Image (tube, rainbow, N blue to C red; front, side, top):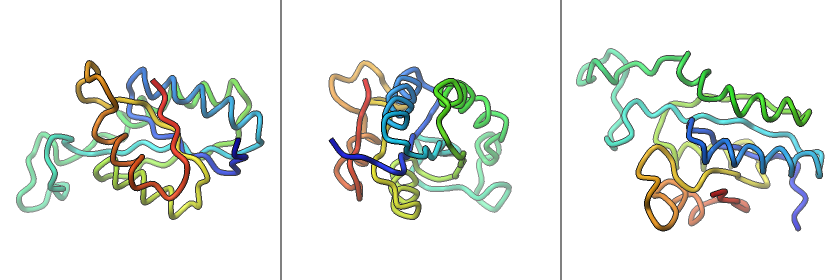
Length: 147
């Protein structure tokens, strides 16, 4: 088994991502790793083009991603990490989930990415969702996909 020193935990507010938080907390406890708790704030996940907040071409209802929403989505994962006495830091980054996860993992020199199997899309899919599949295929480190 790998012994990670930095674990990237991707949270999207789904139950699957909170199950991933439990796995990350357990691994961090066993290895002494620090966890980077990441929420990717994609203003509208079904659109592939980013819209600048309030800028030309922005769609008003999706132009601004409320900070409280990201804070609320991270709350249960934060509680899990605190309950396990895991060292962690939080990041909320705006952008498409897969690309953001990969970029943060590389920039922060993560040894392990832990994420849920499905994001906010269709949880009834038989396999992993698009974001998890993209991350698994392109990650610069080991990826654990929790179901």
